Length: 178
Image 1: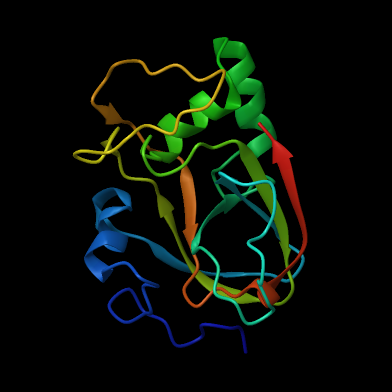
Image 2: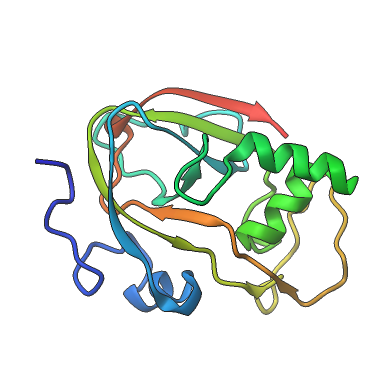
């Protein structure tokens, strides 16, 4: 049986966020339960070049991830990198827009790539657009990333929300500079 076999869209551990905040992060407030297989590579935009000191196998880690390789309708991170090059922007800049990562949340300096150890149920859906900054927030944008000046981020990329995600659920972590 996969980890999180008991989750439903109305009953899951939202990991420090309210359930409403998690629902609102998905376009139309909808997501599907998917069982991701062991060995699947996932990735996320990350501010740091490594894991926090003191992290153990049982440490809970962020729930927000994306497919690394093509998955369902998502082309994967390598295609996003090519698309960014085509548009003449950095992967960091394009990712902020399509993943709707507020400027005051994360510098997006690194791509954290990891491999799932065993099957796990997750929520899969489309990133909802949102404000570029939280009210009163301070931007963490890094070098090579411009702000378009728009008040909103479009979203529309694929995302996974993984309830109860622990460091022991992944292996082969890599932190690639963006």
